[in-house]
Image (cartoon, rainbow, N blue to C red; front, side):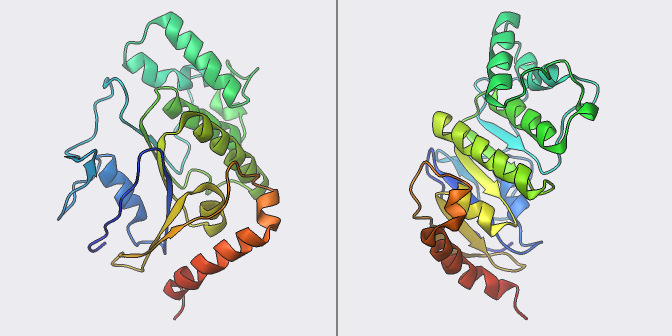
Length: 239
């Protein structure tokens, strides 16, 4: 990655797309304080990021949802979702209330005592997402969280994520290889070049919200947005 620079506004949903190896995940890791930039700086509210936040930090500043669902197989759905709250020593009655609310939002009612091995991939990813959201982070980093899922499950989770974001309005930085996913979800799309990754274009998605993730893809507006971004992104896959 080389001289990659862009801004994300408070409450904005920004997607990053680009070829494999261009530094998309590295950008997320630098924002989250997991990787130190070799040059330059990452600023959050004007303050340099100098390391990962502690598990007990309250309120949570940054939440991270990884590509692979990172649920713990020995903890039930409810106890997985409660993990961050337990680290922060939140009172038990408050943990129970917030976990119950998260289970309801994610459509996981009836699975509170189920273990991850009994769940589908989509359900496990919902658990991982709610475990992050339940601590109410200001910034949500998402690294291809739906990449391993089938199209039908992915669309369902797109709709659920948009509904949650519409209600909470966290700042989201979302990495994906799927241009359709980026257009469906984001306010703006950052297009990266091949390695060494540079910012090639920042595209504003001019699709009204709220968005119907199914009907959206049949619209002329969606086709135009896709064409504009693919014209630039596709050059990085040619030759």
